[in-house]
Amino acid sequence: MVPAVADNCLTRNEWICGKYYSTRASDLASAVGQHVHIVVVSVLLGFVIAFPLALLARRYRKLELMVVGITTAIYTIPSLALFSLLVPISGLGLSINTVIVGLALYSLTVLVRNMLDGLRAVPADVKESAIGMGYSSTRMLFRVELPLALPAIMAGLRVATVSAVALTTVGAIVGYGGLGTLLINGNNTEFKAQVLATSVLCVLLAVILDVLLVGTQRLLTPWTSKAVAR
Amino acid sequence: MNGILDWFKDSAHWHGSSGVPTLLAQHTLLTFAAVLIAIAIGLPVAVWLGHLRRGGTLAVNISNVGRAIPIVALLSVLSLGYVGTANFGPFGRAGLATLITLALFALPPIITNAYTGVFEVDRDTVEAARGMGMSEREILTKVELPLAVPLIVSGIRLAVVQVWATATIAALVAGPGLGQLITEGYATYNQPEVLSGAIIVGAVALLLEGTMAFLQRVVDPLARAARS
Image (cartoon, rainbow over all chains, first blue to last red; front, top):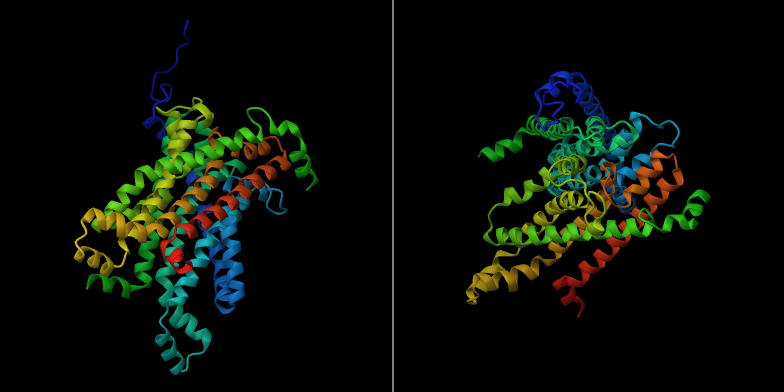
């Protein structure tokens, strides 16, 4: 005899299942929380490392080749391998920090490149007038060059953030993949509702963070949107 | 380091269905098949749109969309769905789902670069060709395409290297390829196997990058003209 099993969309293993969302809402919420934590901290860490690297690379031509070369080389290491290889490093181990450090390393490539491009694109006559007005090099960097380079820097941040949301899922191999951990568990147990829900949430998360960054950029560089409106 | 050397020397790792040659063949086959499919689908569309100078937002946004979709998500949805995880000839288990996923991931760099390449051909050159009485088809094949070749090839180069590195992730969803060395080594606390897997994937990635860079120089018509 077939044992009596409740007949609902969970037991029928349907792709879209309202019962899944109502019964696993807390699981999903904590996975989203972990996902956001990993993405935000890793991109911030990447930004904090990339900024001095870009300034150094701009100043010393030989360093530029090295910095761009190394950050590009990191990018060719498969994420699955990078996360596994970071585990034995002392202080990281099987923790959320392994995934954060890995993603921060990946974000360096695009962040350093865009910072360099943005700073380079500042017109020479603008810099000359700043010097003529008696700006020191530090003051020129923060008051003239960085504001003008902001659109390029923000474009880099957007690419880094959206890629980080997708790559975080691979962190599931060390047990800290945010939505990715649920996704892989769902895949291994052929739990369709969970696979689809986490996949869609991942994409939604990427879109929301991207929109937030675009909004921030509009606020920080009001002159660019004015130019568009004209 | 000794562990890695021992791992490479152990002949058991070089035979059978989970040996390095089999996985390497799967990985290579997957990468090139996926990129070829993406070229066949994406290149004509992107080149034509570039020639018409239309659909620029689409061509650029497609890479943003591609970046936002996690490969594990797409692969998982495909393999639990209609496509399934059955063995697909020489591509290994879940071969078809992996191939489709990777082909989709190869599309954005190919489309974006091909579109930009054709779009950015000097308008004066195109006008001159039109003035000489060339048909639209001739303009596309004899003027725009040859001038766009460097960017098109650089898009293909990016796609090959990206797909090669990304294909390792397939193993996380029980897919084929060299990623299996990494997931298996990780699951069995076999650090040398993880490292060996990473070294093989990384070394071939660099080899592919070098070969494609060389190819890019060979096919660039302007650089070729400068050399001769």
